[in-house]
Length: 277
Image (cartoon, rainbow, N blue to C red; front, top):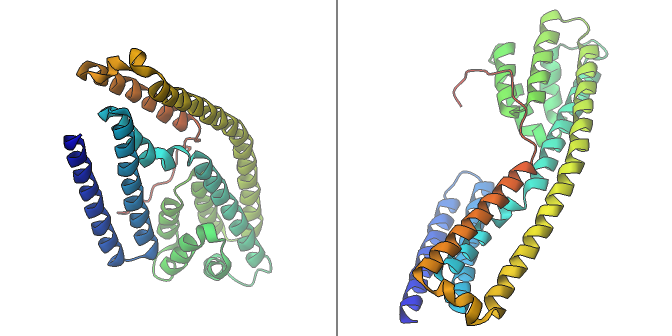
């Protein structure tokens, strides 16, 4: 027990030092968002150390403590698949909205495409507002095509490549730009619809995984707490801990694989600026 308390004290000290360092770096960082991310990272690791220590004390198994800490550490990543998919779809809808706004600005025919892009930066959708503002600033000093290629890199999606390529074509030919942008917006709308349909099936798959994972966790907890020494005594040895670690590692790998299946892979892009990132 004394060795366990010493180990937990060391873990707590390390986690506390990590939190202090992360907090200090966050306060001297460039953005508030980066600071908040570091603070969340530090708090999560503190909670992970606490949960791992409690599980170690209750079960007497070091591997159970390590497994519990790993679950707390990676749980936000495991449950974020739905948010990632929703954010990608919202990103595409923002591109569609922006293209339609550009077409409206070009409709009267009194301004050019470059001027329309710069004017659209003031009311760009929040999901791509930063990228559009940066594009508008680049167009003041860059050539049109290189600025659009880097803009496609900023969007980092095949639909963004389609939009950038269409804008380059519209800039090259001049006439009919508004009609071309409306056509691009309809193509993006079709892409959004297809991804929403696929997301319904992935959401069902993620729900099934969560249910199975919850059942497995309750079974493991019940086995650990209520199994008695007859069933759990074998895990008290070093060999038993190795077997338990292998089982937990296999379960973790399976959960990570299922999580990957629950997120749509990014379609391959076809535009690259070649500019340093």
